[in-house]
Image 1 (cartoon, helix red, strand yellow):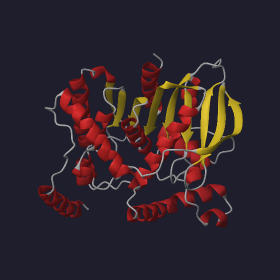
Image 2 (tube, rainbow, N blue to C red):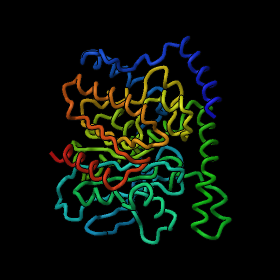
Image 3 (cartoon, rainbow, N blue to C red):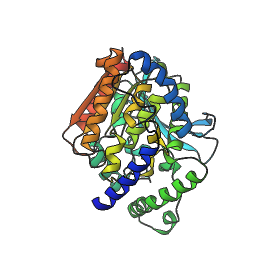
Length: 371
């Protein structure tokens, strides 16, 4: 495998010698004035490469079910986008909020090759299948962490994004197998092929999987801000893996996201590509390396509070790339004079968002949004 990657990388390097790459990347010698000039150009290019040209809007929003669990109100909500089936989600807040407007967090689910469910990874529900419990145990220490945030006094929105849960592409598997656990398992196995087909279809019309996902996340932010329970001046985002990338993009594209937590999803792109790591289509933006790297995008959020949790033993975000990213982000916040607004923590763990990491993340959100 490494031989073929070396051959491929030589092709990449050749084209990079004749193309001017990373033209909007942060240089360590930049001044704050340089960074501010770069910001608007970088955001404009990110929007150009990433987002569909569709108004950020939702319609026909409804509250479909309401229940209370352990002092948390759980609303099952839905709304329509300009296309496709309805988005379903959970909106949570403490039962004893007393009419006060609450700081709010967009809780963003991961990928994990587990597309049958999305929001349910973060909010358990009665009668859920064993396969979902097993997944939550492996990735999140068995915790429904959106519920834990709500118990701490936050309003929390967790919705299915494009290709997941209520937004998944339906398959005939779902009608041909009787055992439900087996349905979920087989669907998740087929979902890799589905994502390939979707990515190629979108590519043919100039879109990307991650672009549609980020668009839908911007819509979910608009929905969150429409809720009377929410303090619009205290909005945060948090997610792991794909959820971490989603948190990165949201905080880069909308300044109303005041505080961001990015978990197990930060590295320089070079280290990912050179090592031949096979990511889902959700990682890739066409032509991205002509202009910027992943850590450059944190400039669009800086100097607002940002926590990045790095997993040293992560098999899909290499440690060398994590270190490169961490140093660049540190430099950005140092230039602004807000070193304490960036926290990068390295955990001796694989690709997870476990209970220790959740506690650190939630403490950061608490500190940043409850002032």
